[in-house]
Image (tube, rainbow, N blue to C red; front, top):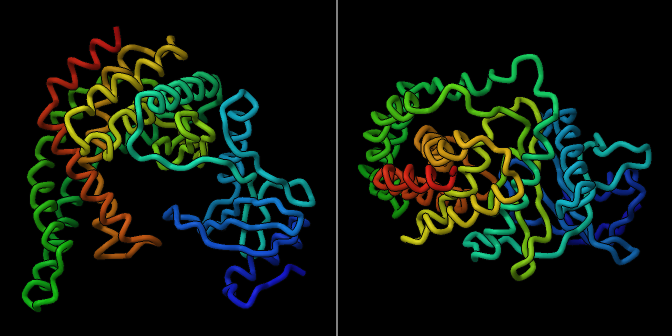
Length: 352
């Protein structure tokens, strides 16, 4: 049995048990890693001196889909994309059903950087281009456009209703004298977002109908990249391959990441650096996808209440981070809207 230290919680002790029984790994200590909003993550120090990363899945998780995501990560690593290898269970599976269900990964060196240097942007863009080129031939299933059709038809009335619900909660807090700084910021941003929704139909109408749909990384962003100085040391957290989605989503989300856009006027230069590096290793990407990636990123921001919705209805694992991310996402949406023509011109030039 693992050495369960007196400071270990019941949850951590259960994870240590599964490490031993499912993977044959004895942990000396285990500590939470405060990242991620879906899985609970740990750093485990094994008795042989190694560190491993442990990902605990929620009970409702589709483990077969997660196994497919782990297979994507393995494909990328095999092709030379820097990343962690999953450590198999004693029976050869990549996930132990536990309980709790967990996967175990090599511990990778490096740190997350949310504001990237030019060299880091170049490395990130190149890795994404290689991933998209590698995944392009993968099967996309019987109805590859299903998720895109749903995305192209957002429930704007439902979004407005949810915004009104959140504003009502904030108003009640203000009347009770219990409102805080975030409540006031949330009220301002939600009122602005409600008015921005009127721009969504025209933005959607301007998108080409034939954008590339394929298997993606699915969550490619600075928080899932590790750097050692200027060197990309790991691409993490690949998402399940199905449903496939717009290539322009992965590209736009990274090129116009909220932390980058909200940081100041250099964000267009940062986007250009990343996209040039992407195209240098994936020259076959259709020009239409490059031209559309800014609008796809903007639409994704405008039609999402991620962060503020959790704050008032169902707090996340690290809600303070979500609060900050909501404010950054909203600021980025406003900036992209105000610079729409300039961004379109930039992307047209980058698309060649």
